[in-house]
Every structure is written in structure tokens, then in C-alpha cells.
Length: 245
Image 1 (tube, rainbow, N blue to C red):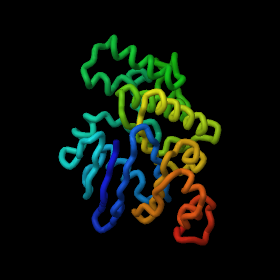
Image 2: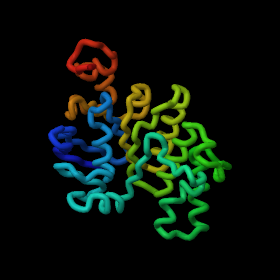
Image 3: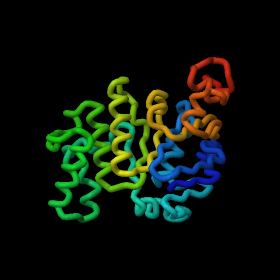
Image 4: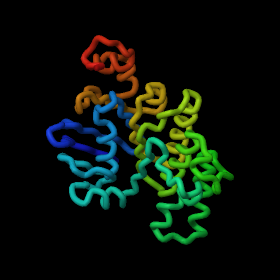
């Protein structure tokens, strides 16, 4: 479903991503972990088509995105869930979710059904006329997720879905992500700092440090802590290969 080979990203003289390769099988979850500034969100944007100034190869659903990346990935239907929901403040919930569908010039009756079904799937039925300012942080994230699944994606990219949420809401979001994946047969890539979320939903885990993948393997292998980078990241020890400063 998703392959990447030797991805490199540079901002001027700053080498952000260094020779990262990955492969994600259909209907599996890859969680990307790392310190702030490690490059995980940049990698996610490359995979999603939001950033195309990189070296290397990305292939999604059998299509190589070497040229005109945004167009190619868009047409394999990749949805992106922004960290804070990414909602339009001046739009109500219905119009936020319908935004992408209307760009496809679908009939309004069809859009209404798709939006209603998406809101039901994230537990927000009846909130169509509310504005983002009237919603909690957790509800805004759910609206962002409803907008993503409305596009009938094969892949969903999540940028830190647990950011700003308490442990109970984080667990609810994790359950919701897992249910959506199971019901819609979706492949997911998730950037997060939350180890509990990662442990619950990941099939595979990549840990990035200094722009490199210092661990890439199964959920079980990561939390077995046989890798020195994984062990320090999980335990939070000061001593280890990761420079905490």
C-alpha cells in the first residue's frame, strides 16, 4: 500500500530527514515517534503529498509519486487529519466536513448523506450547525476525522491526534481510530508523542532521531526495549544514545 525509499529532506544546510525507507501493508497502522524537531511531521507531509521537495521515492497504492506528487497522491485518496483539527472558523461543522466533497461537485443531497453518516461514525450526530468555537478540543478532532473519512480514503495520515487531550479522551480517540480502520479497511500513518496511544493502535513503530530511523519494527519489538533508542524513549532516562538537550 505505501512504500518509501531513501527519503531525504533538506532545509538549506539543515538535513531534516536522512535516508528513511518504509513499507506499510494494507489496513495496517504505522506509528511514527520522536522528539520535537526530529522530522516526523515533515516525513508525514512528504508521504501525504503536502510537501514534495524531497529526494527519494514514494509509492502509494501502486502509483509512484515521482512527479506532480500532490495530484498523484490525491487521486489515490489520501486524507490528512491535522493536529488541531484544521477547521475553518467561519464554517459550521456541516460545511467544514462538506468542503472537500463540494470541490468534487457532488450533488448536495449526496453530500448531506455523506456528512450525516460521517458525523454518526465519530459520535457527533446533531452537531451540524455548531461552529468550531463551540466545540471542545476533542470534538474538533472528531470533526477533522469525519471530514477525512468523508473522502472515502484508502489511507489516513494523522498528525499527533492525541495532542492536547487528557488520557481518557486520548483512549477514546484511539478506539475511534481503530474502529474506523476496521470498518473502512483503512491504512493509517500516525505521528504522536503518546506512548499509550502508540502501544494500543500500532502494528509497526518507527522511532526517528536526528532525522534517521533508529528503530523500525513491530509494536512488540519496540516495547520489548531491546533497542537502546527505544528503551530510552520509553523510560525517559537521561542517559542513553538520545541527547535530551
